[in-house]
Amino acid sequence: MNKKLISYGILGLFLLSCVSAMTINFFYSDSCPHCQKVKPLIIEMQNKYPEKTFRYFDVNQGSYNVGGVPYIEIDTCDGRTISLRGSQEIPNYLECELQEMSTPECLTYSAENKRGDTDSWFIK
Image 1: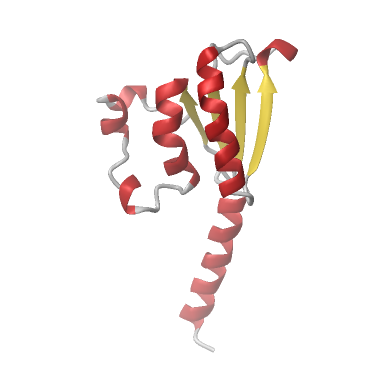
Image 2 (image 1 turned 45 degrees about the vertical axis):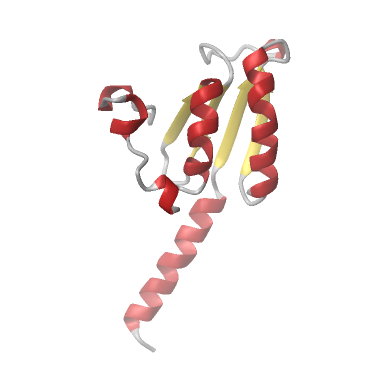
């Protein structure tokens, strides 16, 4: 069998397992109007991407130091944490992150056009 074909097959399996290993942590408050605006989108994305793990954290039920809600942390399989905050940023960029920017609409997504400068990019 062709060694290149085997290598591509192994890489493909890794990429598939990597995408499905993504965990999305949604921090919210039931009393927050911005959270109420974003929560239906989170539920929609959970239904659209069932291979990903979605976890919900009510900031009133625990001590989470997230600095405001709504807030999302996406833990990727390669060890990065991607953070999105607010009722504009989350709807604008969440699905691109879930797709790992693999669609034509998401190809223009970058640190420069997210905030206008690279210093405010939220990948930790």
